[in-house]
Image 1 (cartoon, rainbow, N blue to C red):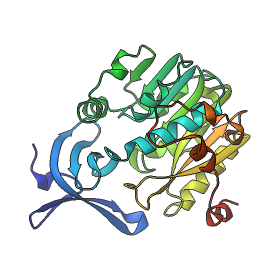
Image 2 (image 1 turned 135 degrees about the vertical axis):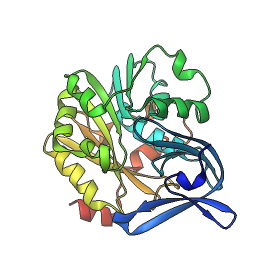
Image 3 (image 1 turned 60 degrees about the vertical axis):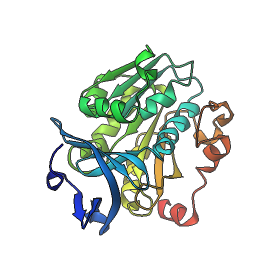
Length: 289
């Protein structure tokens, strides 16, 4: 185990260990008290740690930034996955960029009609560490539909031409290597990778702290797709708690999707929540207009 002083974001305060998520663009920090540091390593791409937090249980941390937690990670995974999987009436080929913890793929395997699930994660150590600390069962390993590719998603998507029915883009914040996943060129590659009636879902950030980023995402998608819809959910461990996702579709409108076909094995989302998530507060509606 590395010395605590070498870990990005971790600080000793008296006898307590804290993880501070520094958000300079928001002029704030978010602190999480750490009970134990369970795992630490430096991969080819980043610093990877797993911490047992006082409030959210185990937390996956990349370069000092929280990614997913034991207590509320299922909310994020269900909300980024099922909306798109049900917007398309009969998806057969599903792909995910990012999501090395394989959370979205665990939701996709609940649909028997899906024939192929591609998971593209640039860092193989994220997948290994996530399986070790978050997903010890063999569900994913035993499902022949899943293929995990450890390569750059921005390059991988350029090789896909009208193949994908539903694409889930589980991207990190728009800084550093992930910045390309917010570019106009990337959105164009997304469009050409989708089948004639394909659907894509993007993590699109906090509508409270980063409305500018959400508006930019929608603007760039609306230049390509005839249908673009934003929906919200509440994720307690995320800054501000309220988070947005944006659907871009070539043909199918999520507002008319059959959410009653939702699988029974969910912990957060149900048909009513899926429909209501598109009902935006007036301040957000006004800002997006």
